[in-house]
Every structure is written in C-alpha cells, then in structure tokens.
Length: 416
Image (cartoon, rainbow, N blue to C red; front, side, top):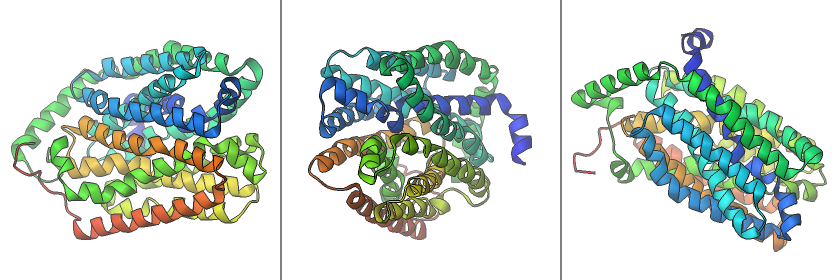
C-alpha cells in the first residue's frame, strides 16, 4: 500500500498521531531551552544551576513515567490523551507563573512528564498497537508531527518572547492546548471504540497461538532479556547527547560566534532531516523489520558531532542539525517498532513507558553535567568529540546484538 492510499484510508487516526506528536513540543528540551536566558537572568542562575533544575525535573518525571505510562494499557485512549493534554497545559501555565527558583524544577518535571514523556508515548503506542503490517508507515506519518513543530516552534517562540514576553508566551501555549489541541484530538478519535475492539480480538487470538512477533512479553520479562540491555545504549544514548547540546544551545552559539536566531532557525534543518528519514524508514521497517535496521540509527549523528567539533563556520550549525534530524528520524520510527517486534503489543504501553523512563533518567543528568563542564571551561567542541566516541561504542554494541540474536522469540515461561 502506498503512502497516499494508506493516509486516505486512515486519515483521522493518523492525524491524531500527528497532532499529538506536534503538541509534544511544549515539553521538549529545545523548547524549554529557549526560555533559559530569561530564567537565568530573572532568577540569577548560572548555566550549571539551571541545568541542575532541569535535570532534577527530568529525573522526577522519568520516575513518574514508569507508573503513568502503563496506564495507557488500562484506560480508554480518549480519556488518557485528554488528561495528558490538560496536564501539559497546566505545566506550561505553572512555568509562566513561577516567582521563586524553587518552583522551576517542579514546572520542568511536569513539562517533561506530560510533554516529552506522555504525549509521544500516546502517539507511538497508538500507532504501534493498532497497526501491525503497516506499523512502519503509521509511525513515520505520526512522527512527522515532531519535525513540523521543530521547524515552526523555535522561531515562533523567539518572536513571541521578544514581542510579548516569556511568561505571556507560555500562557498562550497553555490556552492553545486547551482550546484547540484537546478538542481536535478527541474529534480525530471518533470511532476508536470499534478499532480497540478489533485490537482486543487480535490480541486474544495471538495469545492463543503464542508465537512469533505476536508474543506478549511483560515488562518484567523484557528486563530479563539480554537483547534489551545490549540494544539499550543505541536506543537511549542520543537523548543524553542531544539533551545537553539542545539545552545549552545559547552557549553553543556564543562559543562558536553564531547568532542565537540563526541556531534557532537551523531547527528547520533538523525537521527536514527527520521528515525525509521517516518517509524512507517506514517502508524499510515494513519490509525488512525494525530490528535489523537498528545499527544504522547512530552513524548520521556521529558524523554531525564530528563536524560540529572540528569546524566553526555558521553553516556547520545547519549541517549538524540535519545530521541530528536524520538520526532522530530513525530513532522515532525504529525505537517503537523494534520493541513492538521483539516483545509484542499487549503490554506495549508498560514496556514503552519503561524505555521512555530509562531514556529520561539517563538524559536527566545531561543538562546539569554539560552546564557544570561549561562552567569549568570545557568547550562544546570537546564535548562533541566525547559524544561521538560514546555513540560509536553504542553502534558496535547494537551490531553485536543483531548479529548474535536476530530472531524474535517467545517470552520465557517463568512468571514475570
């Protein structure tokens, strides 16, 4: 089935995935980082101080995500996404209203939980669960919401902050979420009851057959699978690396002699890299399987980091963002599809929530660590070299996992 015919046949549900992914921008690192100069100035914070607040908030959100993410397996999708959107709006309004630095990590925690964590979790879980043979295409189309917001939101936020102020910008975002995104998401989910009934019927049939890609692993069983831990660095390390660079993008621009407005505009290149990649990756996943494509996930980002470390020309900011976008595009589609292939979709909400929590927990220390290193005089070029080495090691580990354990297996029979 071509992309066009697939979109026409599933337009509402795919539109739901796109909308939710787009709206997750309110909790993404690059979005929050655009308010970093104002927060540091108003509350007299250093790079390390603000990075610590962000890390604490992200770590707290990752712990909460372990519990909150699995609720999507138990509650109606319409109620779940409604609560997530409302929570994200409240988090944006909270950050807009902070009067003391103590409240900043609380606002960061809620933004990260509902925005960076649960919004993409809703979209990816829905696409992975309700599409099977066309899972790659569904994830690719829904994923386009993320690069679309990456391309538009940085420039809109920078312009809005300059025009009306940072607090007002965050309040406007909260209003848009409640007045526009929430009703639109519920409208696009019309008829979901029938879709979910068909999914439950298929799950029951797979449970009876108990074989192959339909195998229903629990979260405890996944944690005992060696493949998960070998693949984990390739899946999780980009969030750690990009979290630090995106959060400290203002300092990166200052060190390189680039305009912050130019760095913000290069997110359009990041978005382009994601868009092109997800369109290519979707059919490849449906044809070859996501698991075999995992070793190709990180090399584009490694290339971008090497160029960022070695060169200072302003165009390198754009090249780095395109490379990061290609890697992110592969990550958006491959991560969910890989774990759905390996472990089935019956408990996918709980499994993906665990993966997200691990990613958030690992990345939680990145803004703080990078901030401390910046305060200590370490250059962004040095950090880029170190990150490239880290990702190269993760790539080799992923290749070993695919070479030694390429097949999908049934879960162990012990209770989990």
